Amino acid sequence: MSPLRTWITTVREGGRVTILDNTLWAGGDTQACATVRVLLMQDRAIEVPGCASATSDMVDPTIYPVRHRAAPHGRPWFLDAMETRLAERAVWYRLKQPVIEGAGPLARVLGPADWAHGIFRPVQDLMVADPNPNLSVHLVRPPRGDWIGLRPRTHWEPHRGIGMGSAAILDVEGDIGTVSMMVALGPLSAGRP
Image (cartoon, rainbow, N blue to C red; front, top):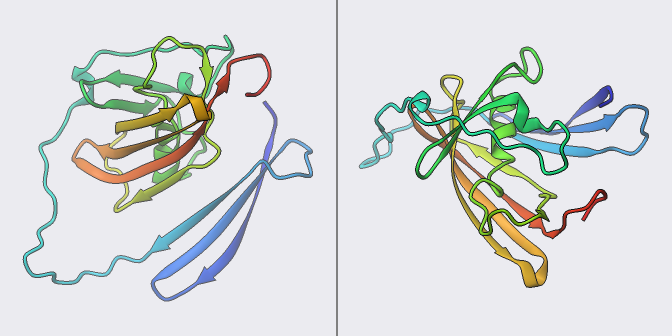
């Protein structure tokens, strides 16, 4: 754990689409840990004949059992910061406290979205590291309410050491987006795979 620094740069600023990069450094490191690219698109109401907005029944994630999973390395991890509820085909997450005060709705989505590749792993109870070197999240609207759900799908090819994960992202009113990532499979050890 160390202090984090970020730097935001504008890649493109347009009338309807703006693209920003936010780069992250940990502690006193001079090499960046990660960069996120954010594409913001302004809403524009238009009429599309024959196309209606999606509707869904409200979901109450608190009716599902609480699921707690300890980190295989035995130390704290980000999953500890979330209440997790396991439904039949989805997993629901609610942050116990904000990651950063006032960070906005995307901050509530990214933590759960990062778990899409490991929720319903193609192999269970196998000690394998499965870090995702990338993460792509697309939202059609901000989430409503505190709960973020994922309906995941995974595919691993262990003989090649790679896999992928994806999921529909939900809030209590229905689908709000998607997430996808590649997975680098390797043996779980004290070091990195």
